[in-house]
Amino acid sequence: EQADLTAAYPQGIPTILEVHERAGRVHTARMDFPPGHSRNPLTNAQIGEKFTRLAAPVLGAQIDRALHALWALDSRPDVRDLMPLLIRPAA
Image (cartoon, rainbow, N blue to C red):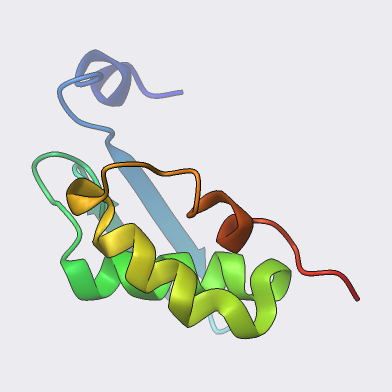
């Protein structure tokens, strides 16, 4: 733990990553606002890609219908018809 990083939370989520190569070089990167943070929001394309990457192994072929339905969530008078799209299809 580094006190300066901890002190910056929760306004940010500072993280430092160091990669040490066998050849001896060290690469360091710091990120205070990771993707998805309110100060570094994801684009709609990034949200769709993340949902697809995480949900496709579970939802399979219905992933596109589920994502399309979720993007239209605010225009739905009822979400009951959406729920079956978010359940693993029977094998």
